[in-house]
Amino acid sequence: FSAMVTAVILLIAKFSGPKLAGAIGGLPIVFAISYILITQQNRNAARSFLVGGVYGALAGIFFSILLIWLNAQFPKYFWVNFGAAYLLCFFFAFGLAWYTSK
Image (cartoon, rainbow, N blue to C red):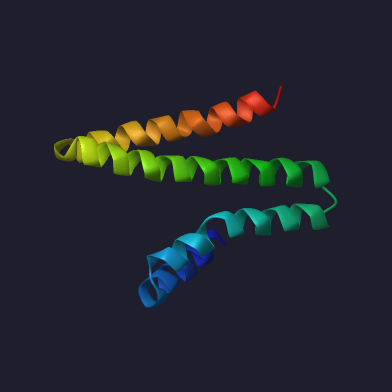
């Protein structure tokens, strides 16, 4: 199933552009999985998964803004910038999940 979803997203990216493919590949997948969990009468897992997906989306926005800023400040170190932004993005999402679970 995952391979089919990836193939559809790549086809959309090829014919419609990466912006639409990113929108289809990101948060809507979280909503689809949450819907499946709800229909299986597993509402608690669905809610947690949906909240986690929203945190992931926020972390993705944080990653993009941070990477743009780092690349503007340090253009020669784009791979280091990518690694730093990715690491900070992970800690941002982890921190949101940890802070709100208390």
